[in-house]
Image (tube, rainbow, N blue to C red):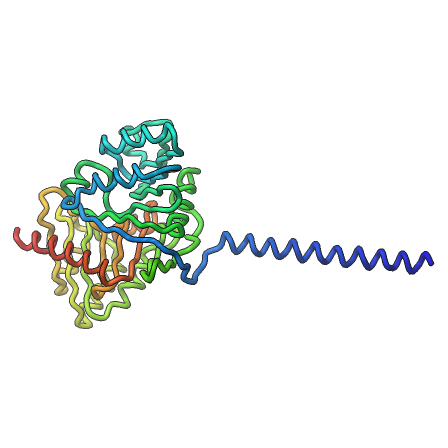
Length: 338
């Protein structure tokens, strides 16, 4: 009688062991999937608002966005000079989770206890997340010049999935993980039918993502760039011009140096102009076929791609693209007047 009982106990223990191993491996794989990059489109709902500085009073829209916070405000800002924004953040920090990361060059403008600075190269982002559900980003630094004098774009996007991407990037910066980090978790989002791709530099190889989109162009490429020194991106513009596409652009006049792509593009027939803003043309925008917009904080430069902390959005939507085309034509028209 003892031997059958012992045998039964052994079998029972073996079964329990395999059940435990199966449970452990299942959870391990599940946890791994939760932290890995999803290469399929993630569905989300929300809206996108687009503003152009200086004509749309971007300071007011930024203040409205930050004032809406009920729980948290997390920002990664290259520069912060607007007193109205500083005062609002100090007030909000008394009752909310407010944390700011600023490039070390401008930290002295806002040396509060809830502000941290980076240590090398540029922390060149310009984004804020409110309540883990809304993101503000684009080319505008919250400064007097960028809001009221320079040409910039500002996007406010209600999307918990996109906000989670930016929150993960913010947490890396807050921990001091500059110029590196994990690949973005959800790079492809379908927001109520509007497709958005989201990347962070340098970890997501932003220049490669931009080149992939430019290669898809079939009719036209328009661009507005503060600084443009990236040979690989310029090469694609030259190839598309050779293939008969309409390629037009405007560059900030003070950034046209020996390293800039301006002369090379101009000498090869691309309709490129120096900007006409007596202050600064600060956009970092490509518009493809009147359908796709690439924007964010990254200038098409090697530093922007490989050394700075940056963010990029690629938005596939004709209505949004039309707004950027209108801004392009405005800036291009001002450039032609000089």
